Length: 291
Image 1: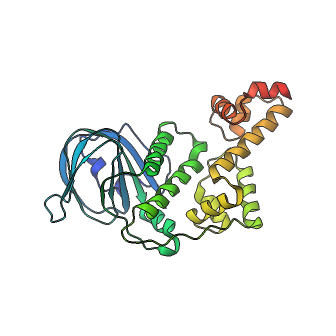
Image 2 (image 1 turned 90 degrees about the vertical axis):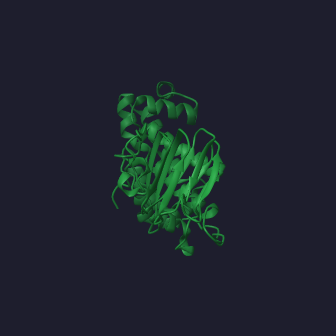
Image 3 (image 1 turned 90 degrees about the horizontal axis):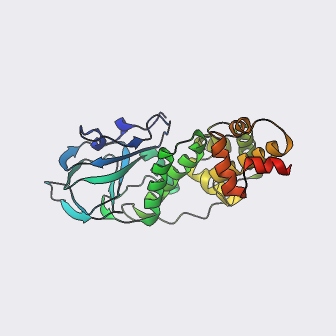
């Protein structure tokens, strides 16, 4: 699957006056597309897309109408934090009544169906002004990853996308969805293969899909079973391995700190310093002095 991009969306972001502040274009994300921008008032109709559209309002209130000119027309005065959800493969007619700062997140339908597991195929609901604090934080986190992009964050970005898809299935589906069974952990063999792969590729971006393939699982199954086995999601475990390797190299060698940072998957020396401060309460230079 190629990168999910503007051509996979329903076209709101292609309106001529939309000038995104930042997007995930060019980052290689195949299941999620993210864009932050300021929108102007408009009224338009859009054809169906293969991706689900989730819009988070960053300011407001502003009046939004959907289903304009149809028997299903609805209007809502939406505050900051309000969500607009448009399922894939459905027409959209919408009117925005004022200027608005937004983050758009587009999720490939394949990711949603995978998150539904045995309950697929599943349909998402059309929503106007709903609130979901967890989904709001996930959207803001995805935007933060785009804003502060570092290649080593690929696994984290994939994990956030999988969490968005799972939350949409749990809380924003159309019709009932049975509860998922408690996930079992990865087997010893699966975990060893994944751990060794991570350890061998600390300096590289590690897509979540590659780790899932090693375990013979879908991305959503892998994420649940990995956390059941280790107690942490894959991106946090990968970061732990990177920190451990960097610490070992700093204590036992005299290679330049910037070189160690690159070998362990950090974008630059300052990135390594920030992580070590957060994880260990120390700096590379201090760690080296301790031997």
